Amino acid sequence: MRSVASSTTRVSDTALMMANAIERATEKLPRDRRHPEALAERWGSRGNRCAVGYAAGFATALAFALAWPTWGLWPLVFVALVPLSAWAIRARSVWAIVLVVLLTQAPAWAAVNWWMARLTPPGFVILSFYCAAYIALFAVVLRRAARSRRFGHWPMAILVPVLFAGTEFLRTRIVLGGYPWYQLGVPLAGGAASDGILAQSASLFGAHWLTFVAASVSGAMLDAIRRRPGWQIVVLSVALFQLLNGAFGWWILKTATTRPGPRILAVQTNLPVSNGSAWTQVDQVRDFRTFLEQTLEGASRARNAGTPPDLIVWPETMVPGFGLEPDAIQVCEDGGYYPGAIYLRALQSLFKETKSPLLVGAAAYLGLRIDGERWAWDKHFNSAYLIDGEPPFQRYDKLVLTPGGEEMPLISRSDWLEEKLLALGAPGMRFDLSAGDSLVRFEVRNSLGGVFRVATPICFEDTVGYLCRRLCYEDGRKVVDVMVNLSNEGWFGSSQPAREQHALHARLRSIELAIPMLRCANTGLSVLIDDRGRITHWIGGAAPGIGNMPGTLLAPVALSDRLTTYGRIGDVWSWTMLAGSVIITLLSGAGAGAGAGAGAGAGAGKARDSEPSDVLGSSATQA
Image (cartoon, rainbow, N blue to C red; front, side):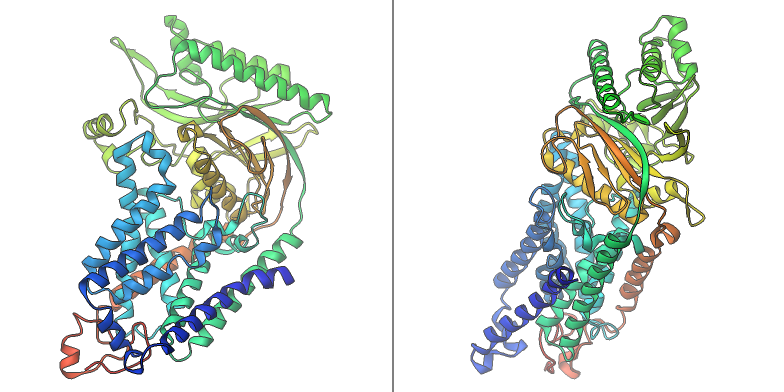
């Protein structure tokens, strides 16, 4: 408990130090310049307000960007919202907030999404400003609430986390299907070698709960800066909240139990991917042979060690051709078209030689046919096949397509518009995938004759919390023993940080559901994550491993019977935060600009153009 207390109480110490520093700095001013009105007058020129706004915005942007791999300065998430929020509350207009936030936060989003620039420069720019727009929305609503009669006296330690978690949920789940990367609280899982003690409470209410946890510290710091009556109680309450959060994590890490599970062999292929070059038939045959050799070598090594694998996994889309559906293969065989059944037969031979079922990523084409001189089909899926006998094989079709990578939200409803925009922004790419329509869980027999149950979120799906919950829980009980994520991260190019960010998000799914996950990724990072979100096995170097290299990982999976609150109730907390944000926004309209100590008469008449006098200071009457 000593380590928990020392790590979590730093939050309150930092807040108190900031408040004391502000007080000492204020005491050095002449007495007639200590009051908020004097400070506002001093900082009130247009040039100074502009400079302060951009400085605050860039400070928040820098803290956010540095919290993610590869820098990994995750404690910055606790303070990231302080500079921007403090300025936004005092900002003279909504449009000033929008302009400053877009211009300062977009570079931060560009930094964490930098790998996208080589694939689709226009899409990269649009995504950066799109995500920054939600920060602007948060800042605008916070300003509105802080200036209202109803909420002007509420602690920032409540307003900031509620509003930020609500707007974040809007971005990651609701609008355009959601972009569920880069929630503020995800870095609380810590570095790849960390136990993630502060992130264990995601098992209660999900990743957005961690956003609330992190943002509450920023809110408490704002309360310390504002020095309203009772601010000390607010700061100490948040410090206690953080201490309890750390204590819960310590309890989970120390008391959770597991039992031995299956051994799974992950084959990490190293196939470069680019929308500027095609995977030719010659390359496909050569690369497929390499995958077979990798698999046989890894399986042989495991058997010689007396630990034969119960399941062998290949990454997403590593089986070339038109997939493994009997009808599609028959069409190719009848017409003498490549690839015919050569990959099907090779995989069946591999299954017999290794004596282990295979879980492989492949396309699935339904209704494949020749239409004139071109191929046509009814549906095309990104799928995972379980090869454990004769076809037809069990198949899971990806349910949530990757926005910007497999579909364009809204735009993909028009084939003509989608084609034109792809030609402009990502030449060489095609968005012709269909989303799956059913939950599929595989049952795999192990070497002892038992059965373990597997869910296979594909690629981006391991960042989608609600989907992984649907795959793994049913009626409040677990229906899956292990998640196996098949991913193709060749799209990340040489970016190790992007791979580490993906693995970091995946760790949250294991924490939320108390279910281990094996990630099998083309170009890496292939890792085993236990039921508490800890990376226990990886390929090459220190955790979480090295990308852009081939290898195999024999993962001894430990199973957990523990049920989580999030697994039972899902995103109830997130929906509550969104509802709270909407209510605060709507109710802030009445009396906006007149609360928090604003006066009456002539001063009240100017309230729409000047902030309340005690927005950042002690209460005083504005004349």
